[in-house]
Length: 416
Image (cartoon, rainbow, N blue to C red; front, side):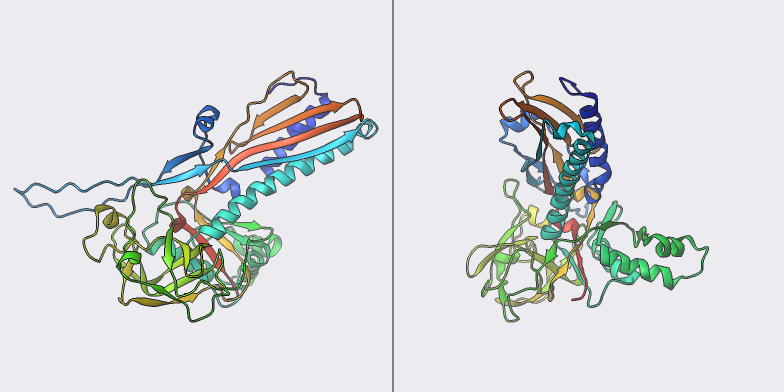
């Protein structure tokens, strides 16, 4: 960390900001990180592909007969450095006499940048995660969270670290239940819930208290929308070159539909990702974007592998079972009322991509830079303007956030 022409007070401000940035993070501390090379990202236009873990099929071996090798389709996800956040402020020659003000502005800068990073991770999980639990009442019981665990386990995603971020009101609703349901002072779980509104581990999730959740509006699509369920739509074929997280689908109408809407389709059930057996539960989907009056992009794609002659890739990545076949099927929206989203995710499914800037030294701007615990590089710049007697300070970060697999994360919506 070069010191350049920074005063001792300025270096202390930067070090405090660096520690404060790490301490202020919540949700973004609990996802994966993949370090990038500045040279590689420049050559790749700040976008490159991240591989998705393979899923393979098995077959019965017959002694004396050769096995038939299956094709191994490696799915990839585009990842980009999209977030270039800066928090600038100025202090004039008189204001610089008060070093406390300088420290307070540094604190405000790191608070904002940490909030931006948390908000980005929260938005990616809340708006793209395809697993949806809609609860009719307010947050308050273990059963609410156990529904999310059931979705994860029955689709073949056991054995992974997972987290649940709850809005302050929903988190405290669960804490209220814990503080009374097992009330007996001296019980650590009950005491922590009563004294500190602390939930901790519940139904296999590390719980985090969020200040506020990403708001999901009430679905505006009405109750008579259908989606085409002919072979081409439920037989999406993954390839190694496409972004297989999404699929363009034809609806009877997209009027009123919006990004973030959550829905199920009559007759489309979720399949276990490994065994391919049906869970007998409706598959949940999200609207990613609306293309026109009848077309929208959804996540995840419908990979049926039970019609026609499926490719090896369709067999490998099958995620639905078509329980009933017809030309169209009714769409049922799950976000009946506006609510704050409570995201849950497998830690491996969302990834932060830390980036870096190459900044020249000795050209009128002094630079301090350091890397945080999760790989984010924080850069502080300082320049003085002799015309105005003002010093400009900038705090900068560069990163991207990628939802590697929307079928490994989702949201709980209460009061639906």
